[in-house]
Image 1 (cartoon, rainbow, N blue to C red):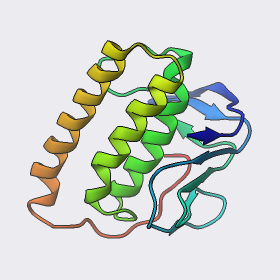
Image 2: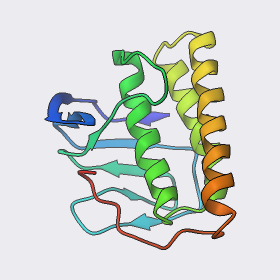
Image 3: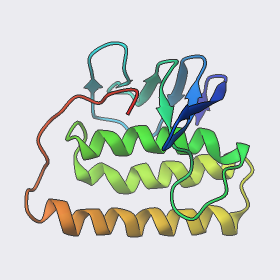
Image 4: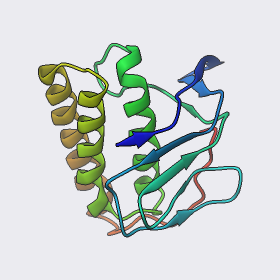
Length: 150
């Protein structure tokens, strides 16, 4: 997976912990969907290029996890893509590939196999829990804008 330089700073707006200081780009193996939101927010093109603007804020790795530098970029990509599914910009069927992207990118960043696999299992369980609660009632949530500072 090709990515641009990753620059961030700590925020003072809990529960969000990190803020990009430069735009971030990642070429993902997530092809076939196009997501464009109101500027200056994120976009995903049909070839899998994810664009995240500077000033985007996120909460770091999910679940019971220690925030280490090797997990911050994977957690950024994952948070953005999962938010896209939550607001209906991507279908729920993209969730498993999104979780795989997190795992593969974490491994590329040097995260040990056991730790990356643990995170992947937690992400899959979270996805299943969300599906059983939200998607059973409505097959797809209402389409909303993805706010870059939420």
